[in-house]
Structures are given as structure tokens and as C-alpha cells.
Image (cartoon, rainbow, N blue to C red; front, side):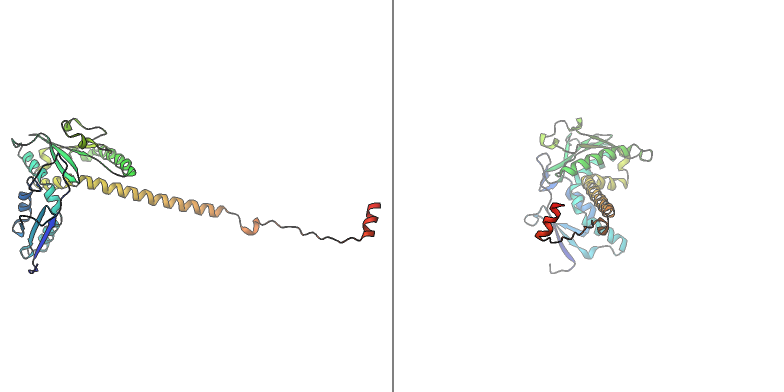
Length: 279
């Protein structure tokens, strides 16, 4: 734009599955979440630019002068996707902190986080159950993710993690997903369930809980890819060490050559041949 302090930021969200409901192309609570996160720095343009779900007008001249606050706000602007997609989750967890449930809230709430994929919330007065159907395309990723998630649940049982949300993994859909569409229950890496209590969303814990749940699938995918890369590195090093061992086991070429004895032949005359035959 002509004004160097003004920036347009447009964002396209993942295609929502049938069970996830968008209002005006955005999850419910997204407009309020944007206003709360960015304040006067951001103006929401309606309608958004063609091909996008959301267009924001950023006035960079209104950034705070303090370097630390400026950096924190820029990081939050870079995380606008999580702010928008995590808006319904924030609304429900805020209600959990006050131990209330909206009367018009569905028993099972679907929140989109990947194209045509969603995770589910079961809001109650004293707790919120969060269920992630875990899906991966690559067969190796499926095996690694399943192993990682099972160890993830075991790690939750250690003594130092008594206050974190309880975590369960199952290969079949949990009972909380009763009534969900059949396609939403297809998960080749199982289902992960977290139970969030009011103590997990008190004060500043709310932002961290919303972020951790909104990015959980990305967190698992990151560690699966890191594990795969680590295994490939170990395998390459092992192959190199075996090749070196085979090279050391080869005998020297000079010692392996067999000496060939040379033979000389004497031409015999016809008389010599007769003499030898008589003898």
C-alpha cells in the first residue's frame, strides 16, 4: 500500500469437515479473539480479499515502543492462524474456568485444525474432554506416531507430572465420540484423549493450554519426523561402519596373488624320440 506503516495480511483457513461449523467463513469466536489479541493494531476488513477467509489491516505505527512488548506482539501476529482456529477452544475453556457451560453449546463440538480434519471437545461444568483422532498418510509415520503416543501416555504417569491433564490413548474411538460422523472416527494412529480441569486454565495458564491443544497434531508430527530422521542417520552410520569393517577384512592384493611356476619345453628331433621310445 502507499502508506509504509500499513500492511494487509490475508489468511486462508483449512477446509472444514462437515462436522465443523464456520460462521461467515470463520470459526465461532474468531472475531472476538482477534480483537482481544491485537486491539487497535488490527482492523478486520469485510469482505476479505478473494480466495481468503480473513483479511487484516495492520497499522504498524501503533506497535508499542518497548522492544520486548513489540516483539511479543509481532510473534502473536505471526501466530494469527492459531488465534483464529483456536478461538472456539478458548471460548469453551474460559467457560470451564468459570465452571459454566453455555446453554446453546452442543454436547460434542468439532474444531477444525487440518484440511477436512477436526478434533472434538465435550464441554461439561467441571471438565472439558478433548479427543484427537490421529491420522497420518505415510505408513512409517503411522508406526512411529502410534509408538510415540503410547510412550506419551506412559510418561504422564511419572511422579513429576501429577498436575498435568490426564492423557489416554486407544486404538478405537472413545465413548465421548458417540454420535460423531463415521468419517471423523477413521484414525490410523488411534485416538488421544485429554481431560482439562479448571486448574489447568486459571489465569495465564489459559493461553498456554489453548496453544498446546491447538498445535498438538503439529507437535506429534514434528517429533515423528525427527525420530524418522534420527533413525535414518543411525542406519547410515551403521552401514558406513560395516563397510569399513569389510574393507579391513579384505586381504592384501599382493599376498593374495598366487605365483605361477613357469615351464620350459625342449624341441626333440625324430632320432631323439626313437631313442627315448626304445629306452
